[in-house]
Image (cartoon, rainbow, N blue to C red):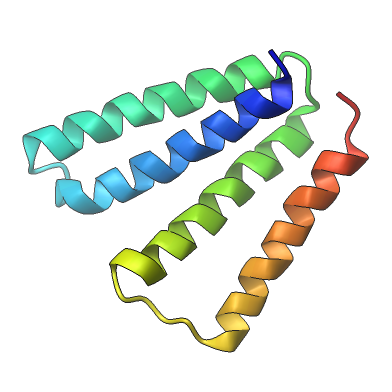
Length: 107
């Protein structure tokens, strides 16, 4: 399987565990906490798999970028966080960085 697709899956799992942490209430709620732990494990396993072939610096930056973008958007959609235009611009800049790293990094 393409390492970039695996890395994308790792980023989606990262978004999932960060949102899960929000619902776990500091790991005081069983099922959201369990979900968070499983999502962390999946995210790390997929990241580890992806870095078998991708450069670690690019893979880590893309993984955290996907997570940052996804969690920022989820925060705006589900948790009423700010949609300030400058905040949105910063998210667009992260997207540009992730795309740039993808296209400038050999497979």
